Amino acid sequence: QVQLVESGGGLVQAGGSLRLSCAASGSIFSINAMGWYRQAPGKQRELVAVITSGGSTNYADSVKGRFTISRDNAKNTVYLQMNSLKPEDTAVYYCNARVRDLKLLWDNYWGQGTQVTVSS
Image 1 (cartoon, rainbow, N blue to C red):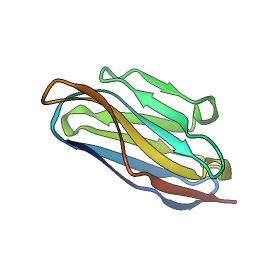
Image 2 (image 1 turned 120 degrees about the vertical axis):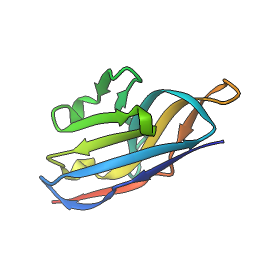
Image 3 (image 1 turned 90 degrees about the vertical axis):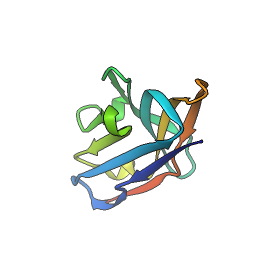
Image 4 (image 1 turned 30 degrees about the vertical axis):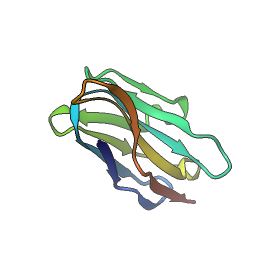
């Protein structure tokens, strides 16, 4: 079994910064892409940023220039540095990872989510 545990959410004023972390643990052989998604009340879950094992990144247009995704492959951890936060960034943020387990089977895993609230 594989677990993703997120941390770093909270309440911040507009213009502030937060850093999210997500650590993967368990029966991991390798991890391909890792990413962050978010879901605001009444809206569908949307991609925020994704990073491959080789370090290639992709961002939603709404966060480009403000958010930075990075990962530490040795620690199976992905980070999301969020700067210049806006009230519209308020959402539950979910970590996602494409993992190959010790049986060499690929699967998609999600964290439990962490709340980010940006006040105006």
